[in-house]
Amino acid sequence: MTTSTRPKILISRAVFPQVVERLSQYFDVESNPGDELWSRAEVARRLQGKQGAFTTGSERIDAELLAACPDLKICANMAVGYNNFDLPAMTAAGVLATNAPGVLTETTADMGFALLMAAARRVSEGERFLRAGKWDRWAYDMLIGQDVHGSTLGILGMGRIGQAIARRGALGFGMKVIYHNRSRLPASDEAAVNARYVGKEELLQTADHVVLVLPYSAESHHSIGAFELALMKPTATLTNIARGGIVDDAALAQALRAGRIAAAGLDVFEGEPTVHPDLLACTNVVLTPHIGSATVPTRLAMASLAADNLIGYLVHGKPVTPLNPEVMGKA
Ligand code: DGY
Image 1 (tube, rainbow, N blue to C red):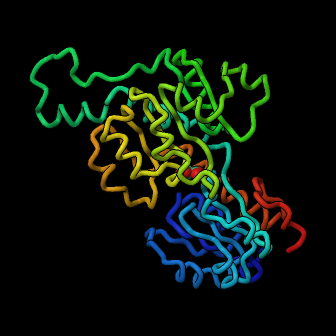
Image 2: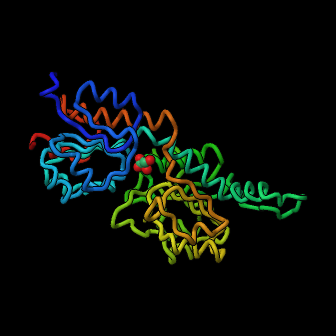
Image 3: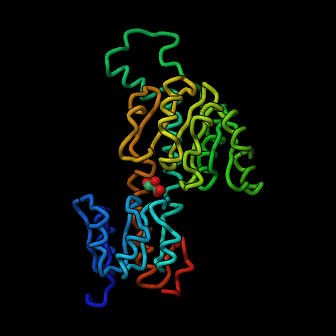
């Protein structure tokens, strides 16, 4: 392809240089190596005359932006979640949306388990206590927590990552697995992790450790609020590795402060990167900055899949993981 006929793409955030290099073999690339935080207007300005956008999940792609960027044909998210996409608006505008499923499943499940265990066993509290020089003797109840092995694991949202959490719980820690999901798993998948399908209220009342792995949507907004937290056991933990907004963070902070649940592990927040000040003030919550998929091989695989989608669609007409394949052929 000569330079003049090559499609043009925008990579809106800093990504692995080798991925930028690979994309540059196919496209005229405008990238953001300094990882500047561009405003929406700046993103729209830079998308002028561009057919592709490499997005990371933080750029809102909606009707307003699409109307301002008439040359755009594809937005490839380097994330499995795509709540930054207004999918109906993209479909109406004939713009293909792709995400990065599959490649981050196990890594994100690892992080879910890390948070669950850190919350149950008070790992962060223990470290802060030690670093503050407060450890001067043994005490029977010093940083006493909850068991993980043999307990009941409740998973809300049983897609790929939910099932990977279930495997860890059932096969690694001998946990009883209960789950709630929009649709029930095939019997063979349930049997593989000895999982039992239950209603949401039963799950919240029964589980010792609740893990949230459901996608964010208007329907799942504040799926866990004061009412749901009141159903949980006072000894239970809550882990959220899905999306901010699924939990009402103010209600969670209140429940943690009042001891209505024992502890929480959170990787995602409403309005992140800002974190609710009441959560920051709670000692019984482990907080991490949305790093569920953040390992070198997984982030590289996610970026490579986003690149595969751009190359697949703009060069060969065949994206790898399209979300709205109905736009293909209409462009
Ligand atoms: C995803 O892929 O949706 C993750 O949250 C991004 O790290």
